[in-house]
Structure formats: C-alpha cells, structure tokens
Image (tube, rainbow, N blue to C red; front, side, top):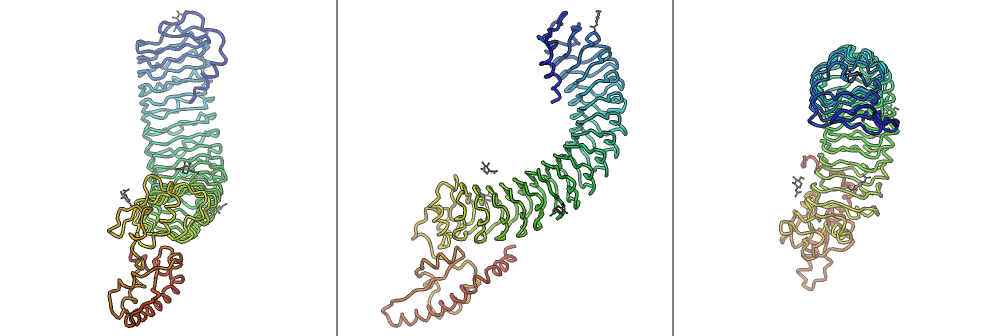
Length: 562
Ligand SMILES: *[C@@H]1O[C@H](CO)[C@@H](O)[C@H](O)[C@H]1NC(C)=O
Ligand SMILES: *[C@@H]1O[C@H](CO)[C@@H](O)[C@H](O)[C@H]1NC(C)=O
Ligand SMILES: *[C@@H]1O[C@H](CO)[C@@H](O)[C@H](O)[C@H]1NC(C)=O
Ligand SMILES: *[C@@H]1O[C@H](CO)[C@@H](O)[C@H](O)[C@H]1NC(C)=O
C-alpha cells in the first residue's frame, strides 16, 4: 500500500546509482539505494547524487539531522521505516524538491516539527502510521497541496485540531484509524472535496457530528467500526451517494434512524454486526443494486418486520445469527430473490411460519441451529428447492412432518443432531429419510432423546419392534378418550395395530389407531366393540378438527412453552 511509487520506479530506472554506494547499503541497477541492518545507527553518507529512491529499513537510526539527504536532490521516493526514529530535524528534508513519496511509518516518533514537510510541495503520499504521535497541527500539512494520501493510523492522537486538513485539497485517502480520538471537530473534513477513503475505525468516537461527511461527495469508503457510537444522525449520509463501503460494526448502535441508508444506492458493502440494534425500521434500506452481503449478527434484534429487506434485491448473503429473534414475520425475507445463504442460528426461535422462506427460490444454505425449534411446519422447504446445506442441530425438535425434505433434490447435508427426537411411530418418516440418505447427516447422526429406554439410539437404526406406538403429541385430544374409557387400562387401547395410511396422514403429529376386531370371545367382542366405537368417534372428531385446529393448537401451546 502506498508503495506504488517505488514499483513504478523499479520499472522506470535504468541507470545504476553512480558515485559511491555507502557502506552497508545496496545500490541496485536502478538508481535505488537500500540500507538495512541493526548495525546502521546514522543516515548513511554519501547518498549517491543520482539516487531516485532511498530506503532505510530495520536500522537503529534514532534521528534525522539537518538536510540528511541534501545531495540527493533527485530523490522522489524516501522510505524510512521500522527504525528507532525519535527525532526529526525541522530541516531534515531540505533540498528534496521532487519528493513524491515519504514514509516514516513504524518508528517511535511522538512529535514532528511543524515546518518539517514545508519544502515538499510535490509530495503525494505521506505515511506516518504506527508511531506514537500525540498531536498533529494544521501547519504540518499547510504546504502539501498535492498530497493525495495521508496515513496517520496507529498513533496516539486524542483530537483533531480545527482546520487540520483544510489545505489538503487533493487528498483522496485519509487514514486516522487506531488512535484515541473520542470526538471529531464538526468541520474536520469540510475542505476535502476529492476524498474517497476515510478510515476512522478503532478509535473511541462516541458521536459523529451532524453534517460531518456532507462535503465529501466523492467518498467511496468510510470505516467507522470499532468505536463507541451509540447513534447516527438521520441525515448523516445524505450527500454521500458514491459511498460503496460503509463499516459500522462493533459499535453501540441501538437503532438505525428511518431512511438513514436511503441515499446510498452505490453501496456494495455494509457491516452492522456486533452492535445493540433492537429493531430495523421498515425504511432503513433503500434500493442498493450492488449490495451482495448484509452482516447483522450479534445484535439484539427480537423480531423482523415483514419485507424489511425487500429493497435489497441482489443480496446473496444475509447474516442474522446471534440475535434474540423470537419470531419472523411471514414475509420477513420477501424480495430476496437472489439470496444464496441465510444465517439464523443462535437466536430464540421457537416456531417458524410455513411461508417464511417464500421469495428466496435460490437459497442454498440455511443455518437454524441453536434455536428452540420444536418442529417445522409442513411444507417448510417447498419454496426453496435448491437448498444444499441445512443446519437444524441443537434445537428442541421432537419430530418433523413427513416428506419435509422431499422437495430438496439438491440437498447435500442436513444436520439434525442434538435435538429432542421422540422415537415413537411419529419418527418413522424421518427414519425412512435417514435410511435413504445415510451420507447426508454428517458425522453426528441424530439419536433418540425419548422415550428413556431408547435415549441415545441412532434413529436410522431403530427396529420396528423397538419403537413404541405413539401417544398423541398433545394432551388435549387424549384426555377425553381416557375419561370415557369404561374399564381396563388405557394402554390396551393404544397398543393396537396401526394402519399404514394413518401413519402417513398424521405426519409426526401423533395418530390414532383402532382395532378391526375379529374376536371369538363374545364378551370380549362386546367390550372391545364398545370401546372401539367410542374411540372411533373420538378419533373422528379429533381427526376432523385437527386440520382446522392445528394452528389454534399451536397457539395454545405457545404460552405454556414460554
Ligand atoms: C554533499 O556533497 C558535498 C561534496 O560534494 C559533501 O562535502 C557533503 O558532505 C555532502 N553532503 C551529504 C549530506 O552527503
Ligand atoms: C425501499 O426504498 C424506498 C425508496 O426507494 C423507500 O421509500 C422504502 O421505504 C424502502 N422500503 C423498505 C422496506 O425499506
Ligand atoms: C454453503 O455451505 C457450504 C458448506 O458450508 C459451503 O461450502 C458453500 O460455499 C456455501 N454456499 C454458499 C452459497 O454460501
Ligand atoms: C446441544 O445444544 C445445546 C444448546 O441447545 C448445547 O448447550 C449443548 O452443548 C449441545 N450439546 C452437544 C453435545 O452439542
């Protein structure tokens, strides 16, 4: 970075450095002088008069004296990096009228004389990063009207003096990251009409003054991550229609003002992860045809309103993991027609609406692990036939509707381990799928969690005679039937044969089976027929109501589960 001048010189230079090459330096075929090594403690001398670039790297030089490079007036690139430099004479860079590139990066500078850069009217790149600078003054930069790049990151700057950058009308890149800035002067960037890159990350900024970026129409990249920002003013980006990359992660943002990103149509990257966002206002994201990724993990989002991302039609990756999502509106992801990967793991989801994946026909990966899901709605994956990787492990899943994976012709991996699988008849559709797709569950095949005798048994290996017949999965329909039992233990009823059709129809939500008796004992027939009739009646009522009442039942269960 910033070394392009040197590269260019490599290509341009043809004549070897003539005159004497200083000891401990190398003067390579071009007019390049390179000095390095711990044995060097002072600027080597004499520097060949035709030298065009000079590098002094990894030495023990602590000081640059007056006109240190005075006879090398053709120098256009000077790199003095990774030394012990602590002091620079005010006149160190005298007689270097052509210098374009100057790096003093990675030294031990705490201060610089204000007039030190004054002779360098042609300077285009000034690298002062990774020092211990405590202050810089407007006068430092007052004569650098050709400066395009100023690197000040990795210093100890606590504040920016008013008007610090006002003379840098050509500046395109300004790096102030990794300092101790806790505020910005309101007009800090007012005279930088060409600025394209502004890096302010890893400071202590608590607040960005309204209008701070208004005079930066060319801004393409703005790094504000790893600060202490709690809020942003709604109009902050109104004049930054060319912004392509906006980094806001690792702050303390609790909300995004309505419309804050609407002007940013050129945005191709935005990071918002690791903040305290509680919700996203419906008008947060306007059309951003270049945005492919949206990172929102580790926030405090509890719900997603319908269609909140609907303007982000080109999004391919949406990361919402590690929030507190308890529910997703049915159309939460509407409009995300290009989405390939959706990350929802490590939230508090208990149930999902059947339509929640609608509108994402290209989805390939979905992660839902580490939630509290107990089941998935029937047909959950019908709108996403291209799914390849599905992560459902570490939930409370007891069973899955029959045929839930059948729309997924391309599926490669379904992680199902660490759930509460209930191994009764309702597990049979899952067992059938597992046996047909043994390679798709990865290294941890799902095992039964209940009933107790089967705990730990792999579902795929369950034998028919190991599987107890199902109890109804909800207590509501079970109770009336038991109450109406005239006599005998209720288990005799449920331990009857199952017809295949019933098993199919009930898709994991429990089932009801009744004996078609051919008994020869008349008394037994009478008792059994009475019981069977009663149960058939109950079963009919229950089954008839089940479809209608399914949703209601789920709702009724919800408060108990909470
Ligand atoms: C510059 O060159 C003169 C003679 O040509 C020499 O006396 C002087 O020491 C040189 N200065 C530096 C800084 O090399
Ligand atoms: C989509 O963008 C328009 C502006 O073009 C905005 O008015 C609308 O609120 C945005 N919708 C959402 C859901 O953010
Ligand atoms: C989906 O997940 C797999 C496995 O983790 C990964 O190799 C693949 O790149 C992902 N696909 C997309 C589109 O992110
Ligand atoms: C199973 O998931 C729970 C969270 O749902 C987690 O605490 C536990 O460590 C997981 N166990 C295994 C064996 O992965």
